[in-house]
Picture 1 (cartoon, rainbow, N blue to C red):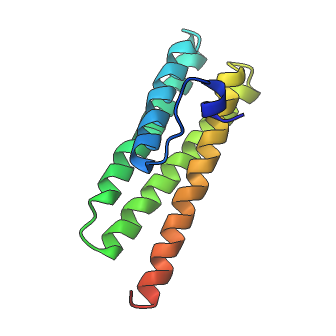
Picture 2: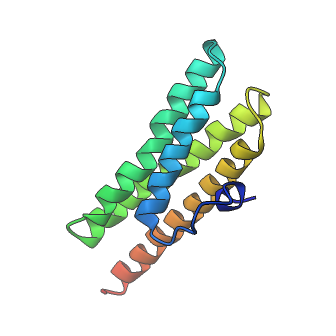
Length: 131
């Protein structure tokens, strides 16, 4: 189930800047749902850092001054999205929190990781071709 399906009133997000920002906002909402115990705080701090970093670093990548700069920055975005996927898996598999929202957010994290990975790969291929 996608986040758009989960939130029936949301409009499809075509702009990747907005999509990554919405992802960050949803990470914040998820952290607020975590239990206020040692595990919840540690997992919350970790996923809050990596999940919001996806949006911030993607905006930075969009302002890259060169192809090499873009590749460097988009690689960071990819890593942060993948790390967020891990934290979501730990949250769900540990039984800390597992609901439709968490599952939808996990699916979105995997999709964003794939998008940013493909973007970096394309940029590297284009750079190698001299484009």
